Length: 601
Image (cartoon, rainbow, N blue to C red):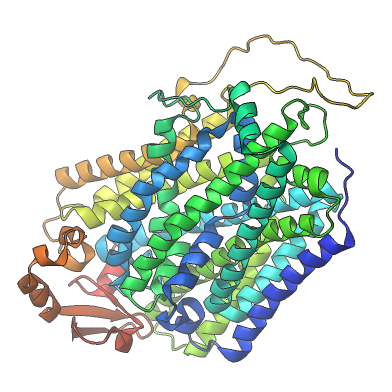
């Protein structure tokens, strides 16, 4: 293991990042004083598109991206970078389909849609899967930087995890969504600055861009496969199609993303934030990929893992930073601030979103069912308590995240199994009128069963990986020794289906859920089901306004809609053109009584 250490200047830069994050939380707790759940969870729906876009980038550009992508590129080659091609599917789908459909319903929890469209039971399943996914996702992104810090400083992992958990839980709990979003803005800038620094200094050390590309070509790191075999880990089609479906759950219906869309002051601002996030995400993933390429070019003849300088490929970026630019006091601190900013932003976003779904999907329905009278101030205080409690749970789970494997692969496996089926149910509800709750239940069960079967099987029977060779021929250490293992070919004892690339998990889980759900809905029709048109995606949105016809739009605006007040449990019929700000605590419901829907599982 490496014995490299940080300079006091590096700790100073890192410490200032933590102090600033806490200061932002304190500022919004004192100045904004969120006293209602709408202020605490949605910033009163007044956020502009630019901070929302940067918040989305920071929330999903976690330690998984900053550590995992360079590790992936270093180990397997540049194939993973092709995931940026999937953005031409991902971001238009989110901006044009999911954002307008969910935003105009005036929701607080994304999973309220599932109750309006299907049943309260489907809503609870969706919420439960989100909670499961987010807790483990946050545990992985907390563990990753902690492992990195240990690898380059020797600081125990438990100290890092506790530091991250305490700071993040503190400013998230007291400041609410405003503190989270504005901290995300700061942390996104820090992350991009840190990556740019590593790329510029690293490329200079290697000998320029042409030298990097030459080394990659000579070591078969630029080969791209166009095979359709789903067992190949990274091909063009895996990253283009599989990558789009793998990331879709995170950006489309995930509460973390939807809560940011809903905090925007208008639908146009919400959509604009997604379009702005497209180039930002492209730049971020490209920078991480370039980091991996530069690191491989630098260590092409002296692999640090083979000579036991590091124990995991996820440590290769922080090791490179300390090994190559560690003497430039302060710059490693910038990288460390970059790495921990990614973790803080993801963790804070997750905690705030979890507090929202616990309040909206569990506590408020229970309170309304029991006819309890709880003030907004008490509900806001309860939200803060939930956020703090979940922060402690995340810290506990982080200590077990090391057993999940490489952080990038773990993310895609969890996202695919827990997220793919849920997005499929939303798609059934938005794109078809005949989809019903029976189809949703059985479709979800089918997709989850398949995903768990493959993921657990692959964990028990690890599929063989085709990893390009690395070398230590150019290492200068006099006492370097390498134990070469016998290259006997292992007979794989698992099912062939376990070899499916983890980047395909979400794709298969999505379509199994979608097809089975629609088939069941078609065979067991619900003739009593009434679907409010606002719960369906309007295809005319994809056409220019001059082709949609103003008469249809005017008829839609004059239509009466039924809103459900989640705070009082009452319903109210209003005109669709009324100012939505007058009904912030109201959500759209079907024509059937909400009490009946909430008990009809």
